[in-house]
Amino acid sequence: MVMNRRDFVRSLPVLPTGLLLGASALSVSACAGTPYLSPRGSGNQLVVSAANVPEAGVLLQRPGMEHPVFVRATEEGAYTALLVRCTHQGCQPDPVGDRFVCPCHGSEFDMEGAVLRGPAERPLPRYGVARAGEDLVVTLQEMNDE
Image 1 (cartoon, rainbow, N blue to C red):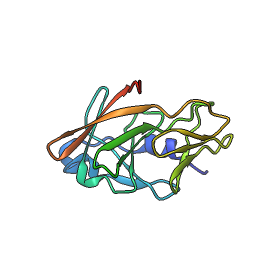
Image 2 (spheres, rainbow, N blue to C red):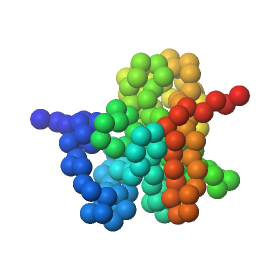
Image 3 (tube, helix red, strand yellow):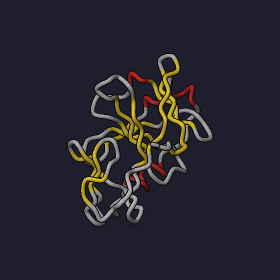
């Protein structure tokens, strides 16, 4: 039986944070080579050590999350966070090089979430990322880009 990423992540055991020594130490690899981290935090916050976010970005997902959140550092030294859920029909786009490509209908998004190629018409949802000491805190509330 072949297991997809979502089922694999859901099958991961839930361990107390102390056993992980900074829960973000747990990682698995995505098909495209982007690492997955299991973040700390609860409710609408994902917390991960900034040192564990590689330049190319990381996918954050904890049990119960249907789609991961992609976090990466920008050239300006800030961080961006995107919900990796295609705005066309809800499939999970894969990070491929400098973009996300949806395997269902071919939509493509840039690393800021903007649509490069349809059928999706709306960008990927963006979340705020704040620095808290050595950690990054992603707040799972869509940002308004106005």
